Image (cartoon, rainbow, N blue to C red; front, side):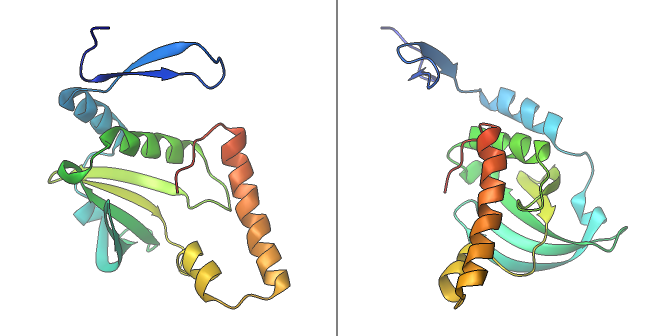
Length: 166
């Protein structure tokens, strides 16, 4: 079958045997969609006192202080040029902006500046969940409490049919 290079065919999960064509967005379409999701303006004017707290494959994570509210936030800064699957970034922003729950790190805002996407989230000062589970010596009631809370967040996302990637 003659197929464009930016198209892929996938079988649907809900209807086995039914195939759908998905066309990956062009660079211009991606940018148009991204710019429709992010807030205008310079986040450097909204936030200050940046401190790097982590780095991963997709970028760096810093804490910052919202200059108006005084709230401490976490900001994931991603250089878009080095992101292999940019459409996943759009999906992450869309999904995160739709859900608020006490057991999920909540999305607050996003900005695009100097070819870098900034995703602003609430800051949880206890550290990464993986660090707590792996490094801390939790007793049985603590393990039960952590497991229950993770499960409650998972149920919300699963019920909403959000695909989770770890």
